[in-house]
Amino acid sequence: MRTALVGAGSLGTIMGALVSLNGGEMTLVDVNRAHVEALNRNGATVTGKLSLSGIPVKAALPEDMTGIYDLVFLLTKQTYNGTALRQLLPHMGPDSVVCTLQNGVPEEAVAEVVGPERTVGGAVGWGASYRAPGVSELTSDPEAMRYEVGETDGSRTKRIGDIAALLNMAGTCEVTDNLMGIRWSKVIQNATMSGMSAALGCTYAEVLDNDKAVACAAAAGDEIVRTVRRRGIRLEDLVPGWSYYDLAFEDAAGLRRATDWLRTYFKPHRPLKASMLQDMEKGIRSEIDHIVGICCEWGKKVGVDTPVCDTILGIVKDFERGATPLPTKLCLERFRLPERASL
Image (tube, rainbow, N blue to C red; front, top):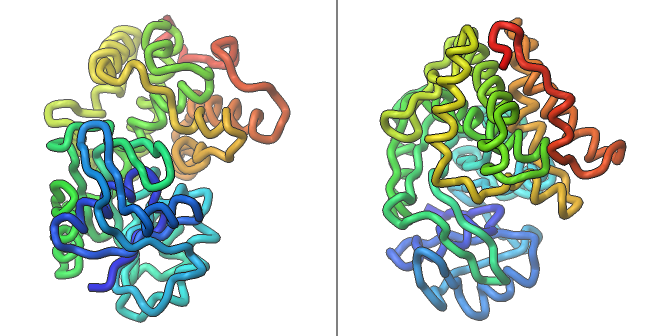
């Protein structure tokens, strides 16, 4: 199975190294010329929770891709999908498949370009950071390197089994019959804490330690739970025993329970700062439309009010169009909690 991984940054570098180490093969495709040259010259280096050096991999710039690929893993940020998918199309045959491992719910947008029959999806359950050309830091424990992959209609197919077998070379992969349930659980996880981190220009700890900020994060979760319930999507627990349905509330007592849930669930991640905020600080367009904007969009479609998600989206978009400076916690003044659960 001829395989490419498009968007071979922090995660992709580690995946490529582990697949190579375990006897598999994939071409790592990235627009960063220095990174591609370092990978080809020195191999892939992994630091942090795993120590590997000089693992032979094959890397290429998008314009240097050749021939047809049977399988393509897509790890670019969704903001680059238009360009990445156009470059990919000439290298896809009728039976080729794109497995998107991106944030948000990208399957529909990817399918519009490559066709629904050539689109599957998955979720990555671990983290990494790009450190230098050819070097990536694993920030999660190796035993936590999990993936879930599935067909968008929940069917069990041979190709999904083949994809899972390849990903098992770079962690542990399970085939799911509820891809959308996993996707939307991850959206809730990202839209709540990452969304508030981006909207307030602060770390998760600063969100969790501020009563109004963490209440707004919980209210964003409540809005999304109401939306997915209206759509008939069944959420999955990303961490066993921790249900995102616990973020739904009807009154002030329910809101307190939801904020307690967030403070406990995200306690190990307190030092983190949203990748969206890091992009904003670098002047790079963030994935806010694909992580929070999609919640606002679907809320309108199914008749669920999403005032907190709307505010998060508005603050980040105001910054990105140059109308406001980088957000700070003063932006809390723009948020309004539902009257049923006022602090």
